[in-house]
Length: 342
Image 1 (cartoon, rainbow, N blue to C red):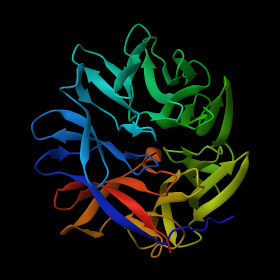
Image 2 (image 1 turned 180 degrees about the vertical axis):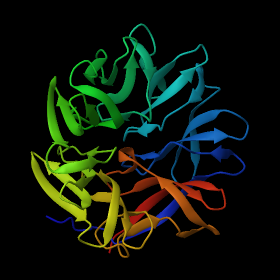
Image 3 (image 1 turned 45 degrees about the vertical axis):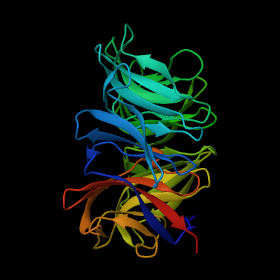
Image 4 (image 1 turned 180 degrees about the horizontal axis):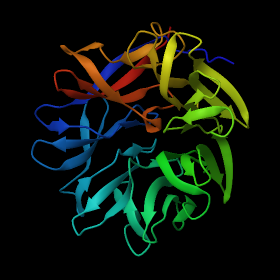
């Protein structure tokens, strides 16, 4: 099955840019909720970092160094439809933690204490129920994937058994299924799903695939989207639903390589790929011209795109994307790609 693009064009809406207020947005991506609100981390010219939301009309401060306990923010902030925001932060008192701001209240999800040695890297994801999934290291020396909702901290998977380490970031859907990429002690690596204490291998490198992208994406239907290379040759973007595979795009078509994929609850897939003879970009379908959203070398505000970043938290169910962009001029932007229906 080939994915059919639902949108043929996108309008790029600026949310924030470096200049008078911000000096850096790297290295973290921006997230977006279904209301089109974009959340991002930014370094300030006045010193320190902060977490912010933007709509294209205004920017609001979620938290900064003046917010109580924090001295630095070191992740993307994930934003939910009710405006809750989860993030990693360093404490003025020392140590690190993961936190949730909901209804203007700061909630502690987990901190480095007798159990956790570190929280991170990259950033958390959360579902609409407020359950947060994240990576961390235990004082015992093991690394793991964890969740925390209304109850105690749960260990989804760690390096005490079959796993040697974890890559990318875990993603969690409405049903509480957590999908993550992990290296296996027996060799190779795979994408796994965890729910209710059970663990399922979605795909691994023992059979069909030779390499898997670092950032699998998951929707509420349980469909997993990922990039991969195939042992028999070639590469592509693939979906897995209930053990059934589908091909979104591969290099039998117009693309020569693939870097990652994002999927939403509308079933829309966008992916990072390089067209044959072209430059790395983000695409909403198999036509590298009609379905291009943004690519390196594109003209933008008097310069050209030199780099961009997004991951599974950067898409919403309205097919909008939040993208961090670096220009050749040195300027950086957070933009929202808004679909224009044909």
